[in-house]
Image (tube, rainbow, N blue to C red; front, side, top):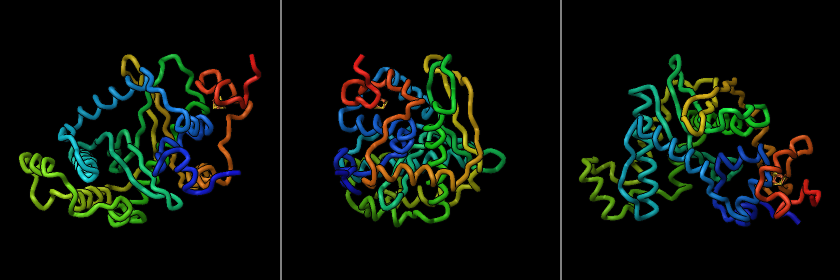
Length: 291
Ligand code: SF4
């Protein structure tokens, strides 16, 4: 029997869907599911990728270093950093590590856009992936990355067109003008943040206003591949954004989250992926022949 709707989220110990969950469904959906069920190993490659992202973010602005105590502190921190990031897009034509929120079939959806750039007057979404310099960048390899970048573009478009608004966001995440811890408030005051902005509702309103006011979104999206060791760009794939196309991918992905079908293992032509999967022959026997 399949578990329906929010039952799938509950079974996986989640309260919302991440953009990377949907992207990973286009590598191996079963692996995405098993990562939640049986634990994700924090590999040294992931750590390296994270460090690189942090270094890139620091090039553009300095993140808020105050430690959040309450949930509202944390949401404040995210909204504040996003707001600063969006200001940097306006001033310098580039921003990095932008958290993005949205909704899909009634589920909470969130993600983190690696980079946005103003190109020919339009705001373009760019995803950066660390990889090995000698890896072949095939269609199969790039597929999840393209789904990811297209979904970010879709979420930005939804906010800009006010299909997903600040009101939706504050309601869904329960943000009001209260809830900041005293220590967090004091630190913000010490930083010179104006009193009327020292609450999660108002700072997130600032962040949404910046997204509403973005220049037109570019219909080109890009995935940049960066060598994991040197940090140098290896190549990039740029495609035309097409909303129907991403909505088809999302509709397929949502069938899993709605409990309409079980997670799909990779297809036979792609079962070479299993050799690199920690669940192969253990939790997953989809393509295991016992040897
Ligand atoms: S073993 Fe293969 S089919 Fe199973 S989860 Fe891993 S990649 Fe997917």
